[in-house]
Image (cartoon, rainbow, N blue to C red; front, top):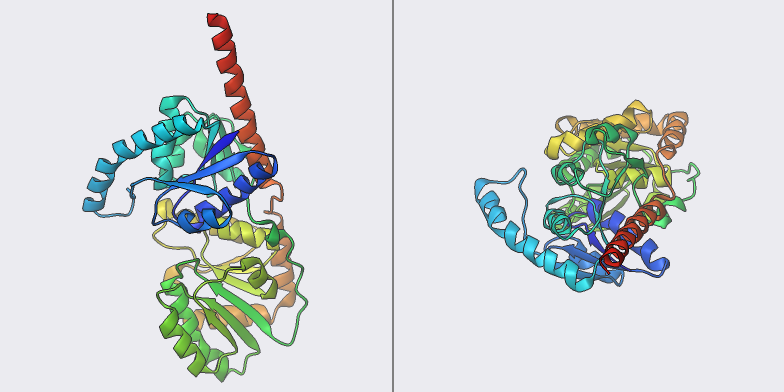
Length: 368
């Protein structure tokens, strides 16, 4: 059977869908991604051997009026193209991670009666998943607290699919250096980049035995790489980390945003973290995600407006001096890990696809 992966835009949408697609392929099925040329799916899915079909669609939330007008014009044509694609490929079911790139695919699936399995990765569901939840054949969630947002619709807590490599990250013994990974995701984070830059002289002045790996994103890399070299700070600055599980394995502490994908990777690897939620995320979902882990003692929460070089220096040095607290955070965050999330999501897709085929077969037989 062939399945459509409606997961585009950011790594937080694309990476979990890739994990599910790999599981489907392992079981002898095929998967086709549908997204936009600007999203990470355009690069990541083909790199894994999956075909990508493109739609022209933009965002709706947190965009200007002109972008909303263009999206409104693009939507009917994107739905039509998605509907034709579902028919041509004879899609068995659609897997949606939400986001604007998934909206036309889910609407087309509803019109063509193709079952949809949605996965809501955040504590607070996004706009597309809130709408899709009204007709989805299955609703999968990452956090137990999310279930109430879908009312009486049944949900299943599967967790967030992540690459197997994160579950294979071994515990890191304490060494001479305290290694910190700072990452704002594939495009980087202005706040985290600036905080890292401001912290370098503070670590040097304190003679702290701290090494830092900073993933800047491609735009900020040239300038920050030059400043890092001049700072004398141990570690390295990179535009992008191709092997994030390996970077996690080298780190004693991770400083990152609080997207659902990042939190699932932290849980799988059992890494303590300082979470700095992106302040403009829809419905403040990153803040809600971070609060969930912080309440469980699985991470430290620092809001974006409070994060600067001094705060980063103070948080890192305080945790470096408290190895028992780091160990407790690592144990707590592992309780959020769901090693079988990809398998359970793939199973849900196969179940709804077979159920739909059985119904269609009964209807054909009843007409004979």
